[in-house]
Length: 74
Image (cartoon, helix red, strand yellow):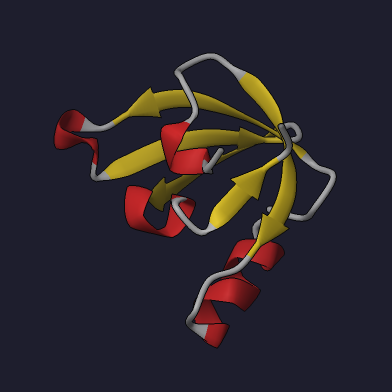
């Protein structure tokens, strides 16, 4: 499953981050989207363009397109 597909309120573990743009890959990792870290979808903006994600104990907002490059454990 991808982070962009995670139902609201569900907690999951990150399996991998594979963004095709190297700069964005580094930024996602710097924000805490590391393999093994837990994430929870808190809210989706209208039209689903951005997501508020709890990464560990930190709240982060990212574009849903970027969330589609974050793979979650089954």
